[in-house]
Amino acid sequence: MTTSDAEALAEVTAIARRGRRRRNASQGARSCKTEIKLTPEELAEFRARADELGITVPAYFIRMASVGGTDAAAEYEQLRDELKMVLRFLAAVSTNVNQLARQANAAAAGVEGVVPVTGEQLAAMLGALGRSLAGVDALTAKIRRVGRR
Image (tube, rainbow, N blue to C red):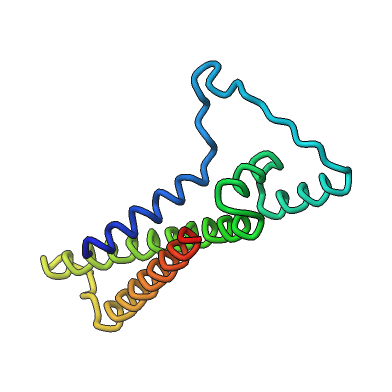
């Protein structure tokens, strides 16, 4: 993994972590409050948008303000969801790599009943790994585009 790949992966991981609940501030740190007056129709619209993203209305306003508007907030949530899917896929691929390595080592050690790893198995695993890395590359490119706005 090159330095730029490592930096991109660190950036993607940091973005995924930002999707988690904010930590509780020390006592009194979040003592400021703001009020936004909306019509019932406006509130219904914002509530529907927040519900689509699976977040609260206040969280929607915070995200919208911090990432540059409603479209950017929706794109941010979509990128977060894509990142979670790619990371789950990478976890599954890494499990498969470990299983193949264990099987290959056992076969090389002559453990009775263990079938050697085939070229087809290795090719399938490498193909899955290549697809997952392509997904990470595509996702980091999207994140960079969103971040440059």
